[in-house]
Length: 77
Image 1 (tube, helix red, strand yellow):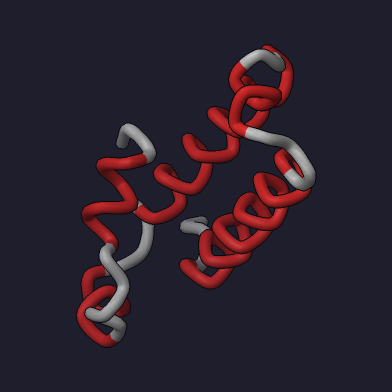
Image 2: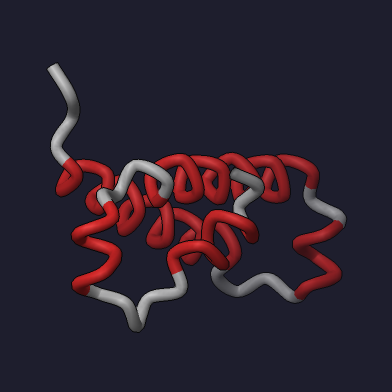
């Protein structure tokens, strides 16, 4: 059974929240020197990109103010 696109939207929101928690209170220098946080943020970005790629075109067209392709590109998908 194919997963509903709303669940992919939940994954996107969840991983954006995770990234915010992971880097909260960190300077960029602290972030880049923290291997675990860099890895965690990278993984969350991958999940966001994978989830965005599963959003149907009709939903993307309805919300065309969201840069769907840019998000996919940024996240490496």
